[in-house]
Length: 338
Image (cartoon, rainbow, N blue to C red; front, side):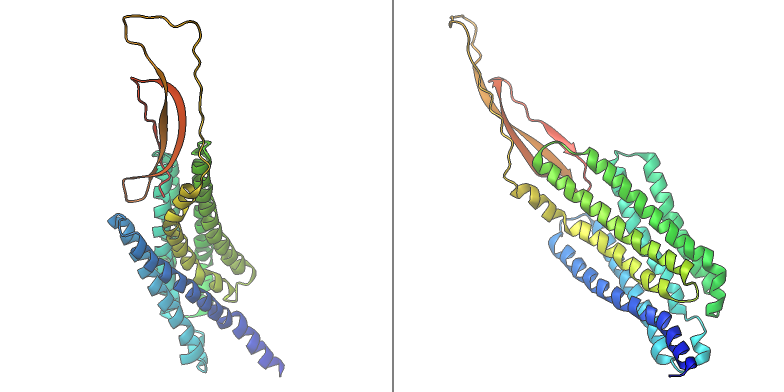
């Protein structure tokens, strides 16, 4: 193979070859999101309309994004493979996909911001910061799309390098910030009871892992832009970013029954029996005598789910001596927003 042929192969590998790999990975993740969407509508028909609307909209944007990136690779690799002039030009689909990736990210980050607001009991500062970061990320995506549609060749994209980097930096910062807030407030919600703490630990794991995946993908895209700016390696990561967002929110919603099942299946009830002892000799009186008996107190952890009322998920039982004319039912509301 001649030196020129080797050079051409290398260029194709790190440009359209990288984009092709990105499309394959995104397509696999799209299949997962389709299954998760079907599972959600099949299993959570009682959810509020706005949660169902969120899931449907995310899946719709996911579908459009997958169609756009598939068209991009087909246009370059199949339709115009031997057309050198077209190979150097920007096709509209690879520019428009940035906008739909931004839409998906905005919807998911807005949903997670709402969770932060619920868990923090309406902390305005955290909610505003999280919302502002999400809007800034989407704003950069929209600005990149508008500006790039005016360009004609791949070489012209160098003028938008700052915007491209800003999208990834702000996206990663938003995901890390939201994950940190959820981790902090969920950790504070621990009750000391085994079953409820198991449920909270599971929620913490989901919050951190979903935020970590999208952050790592955005950072990998950013590093690729800085290290290999003349290639499309960063595209391989960015194509999959929207799919990670959609799958993360779907996994969070679909895992609710499994998380509650962990609590329900745990048989480690905490039961404390206190024996009462009488001292001294009995005496008679005309007043009614109080008898010490053990009254079972159910401490119910109420789980506030997105789009629903309250769902009683965890009950810790104990027994204590109480006078017969008293009855106490302690209900502690734990806003897990899940």
